[in-house]
Length: 90
Image 1 (cartoon, rainbow, N blue to C red):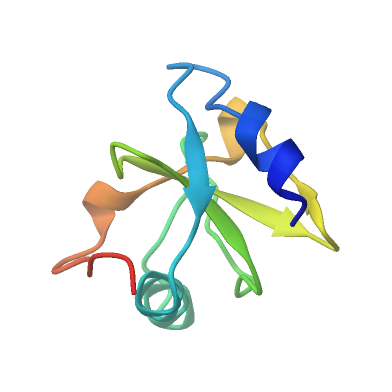
Image 2: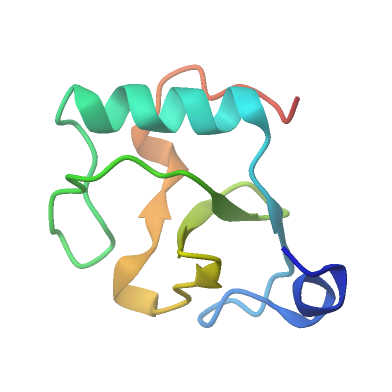
């Protein structure tokens, strides 16, 4: 993802800056998706694994990146509180 774009993106609700998900974070998220245990902030089940994602720097919300385009819709956010032992970036 273009660094300039990443520098201006933020959570649409809290206005917290975002960063790319680390490999361990992405793996944990996709594991939970495969287990059928994640929902969006709108309550919809997350059914597709993420190839790439953005996370707020306070590590509370994840937004998917689809075909290189960040999907920064409030109802599409995934709260990390749903993930047990969510790893730090790596």
